[in-house]
Image (cartoon, rainbow, N blue to C red; front, side):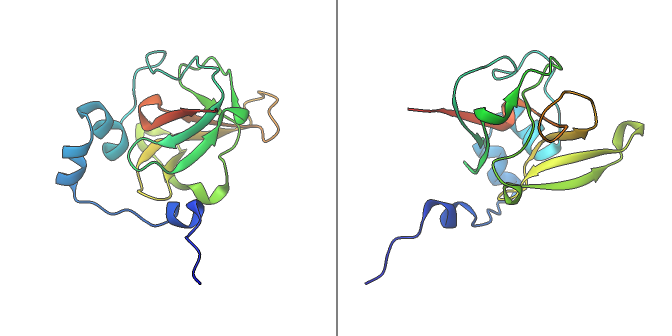
Length: 144
């Protein structure tokens, strides 16, 4: 007798779509941030000051990325987390745009741009990291 696949096994299946498919499925702002590595303006995203409990998923593919347990107030204008749900949920790319070196954070499942991670800023979090993530890159699923 076979058993159904667990949600985590299904969730890790890579998603590949054409640029045209992404443009049809995402709003212009979502497309700009998720597929073109854009950034929403600070203090304008729906989650920058949210304290609701729940799971943050990739807005493009539904991959679970962060929980509200790791969210903290950094007052930077974007939602901040001190760690992802698990390291295999995101991938990292060196970003040398804007004349500086940063570490870009992408969804490991669909390769959508989420934001950047910074280290050593002195926030006093368990990891001393700040995952600075665009609200438009995520969807909060409230905890029941």
